[in-house]
Amino acid sequence: MKRTDRRRYQPKRRKVKRRKAGLIKPKWRLRLNWEYLPVVAKWVFEIAVVCLFAFVAVWYFGQRVSTVGDSMSPVLRNGDVVLVNRIVYNATTPKRGDVIVFKPKGNENDHYYIKRIVGLPGETIEIIENRVYIDGERLEEDYETTNIDDVGVVDEKLKLAGDEYFVLGDNREQSEDSRDADVGNVKREYIYGKAWFVITPGDEFGFVN
Image (tube, rainbow, N blue to C red; front, side, top):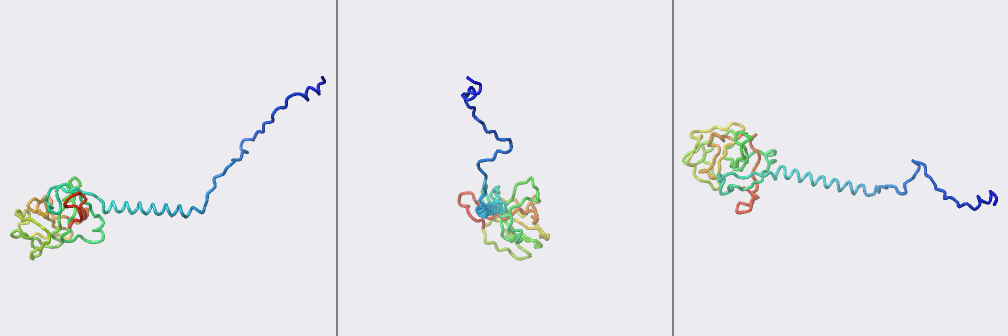
């Protein structure tokens, strides 16, 4: 057989197409549907707003403080968990009758006290025969209290400074309050907030009056 004939009968080799590196084109492409962008942006905005409101609600209205002792009985009992409104006094000043949360003399190592405001800045406080007098006039209280057997440091007229509040517990027979030298008058800067809701299940559950 001639040389040319042998070539004719040799099996054909498969031709493999080689693609040069960097020239291979992907079969698919990531395509963004810009029509959905406003919808996604709206969802992100709404979620951010909800998270912000939740944070503000918890930080300013949901801070919890536990009641220590029965000095505010019957409004609060020992162990009751109270929610504190921390923003209210940024808009208004503390009022007589408010139940406030504070730390005596601003001592960060002490526990929070919960008492009721009786005397306001600049007023003169007297306790005569179990009764509280403000600037010489008897204080009429519309909440339940007990007798004041121990006047403490208020054995004479007590003048409050321009940033001080005089506080008492409703259960005055078992209350450590402004009558005690260790507590004294409460400066505005020491007030943590206003006790506004009891979350402990029971008779005290609800708003603090």
